[in-house]
Image 1 (cartoon, rainbow, N blue to C red):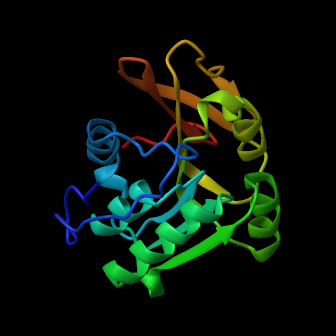
Image 2: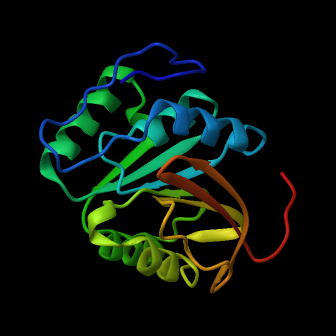
Length: 188
């Protein structure tokens, strides 16, 4: 896996061994970042279920100011830390080795706020809806923020969850990205 565009384009990313994480496919990352480009410069990005950090690192490469990564798997966190170090972006990152629920509570208490939130939970654990429900009431989601859920096409999230309203989907076979806005309409 490599960084696909931006300042870090072409840099190789380490991925953890085993089947506990599923890196976001290049085609999906490209479409996601192309959609987010107008919002990425100076954005604060939260990458939930981050794995080796491909999405958050891609956002940094394309101009995001900061990325916070949340991942509970030790091998994935080790790969993520190696990627952050190799790319020289440690000053622009925060890594939370924790369950997403606990991390969101801690980040909320710390006053962290994000402009872009991406979640790609393990498909077999069906965590999209519970995570979106937490985000829909969480103070970490800034007003006007974008929340993007990667999920199985067969299991779409509802169009509204708390403060979040779906406004776009992008389908890639069995995988779909659903884009939500927090607190009403904010054009890209």
